[in-house]
Length: 230
Image (tube, rainbow, N blue to C red; front, side):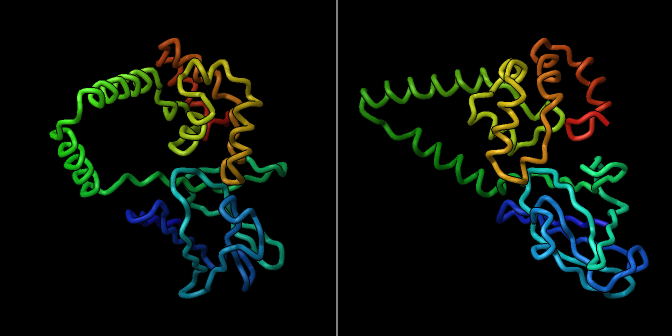
């Protein structure tokens, strides 16, 4: 079972992993997954108490992670209340999935930012600076207007959308025409926590979104799990 507690002060989620002791015949059980490179030594060691194994870990937000419970004797077990399940590289075996959303900034910080912006706006700069500021604002506004919300594509979260934007993929059309190898290269370069994602259907989804075929996109996404066909 999974219990999530988001930490507003930092972009992590405190996750409590629990597994009934009778689910796996072992004394040493650990949580292995994308967040620790499936490494036994780096696995989160679970303590047995009150009929269950338990481990608490802080996991970076804004992503989905595959994981399983592993015993020292080599036995594996899934979390029976995971957010989802996906096929593993091994035939007939599925991995558990935990999804941790990205935490937004605290309201206090947003208010402070607005106050600062308002204060700056009341300052009267020199004429030349005013012109430069207007040009910069106009350029930023134009860029923002052209960008699409790539998070509408099944399998893309805030972090991945940011990575794609940095790689020059900012619209549905960009994603629809980008080679799958290029997109996969962006994910691979970002590290193991992103390498697990497979963009096989992203271009197909993006083309529908770019053409405004939202109903068709919705129908397609019903068949997907994490951006992959079930």
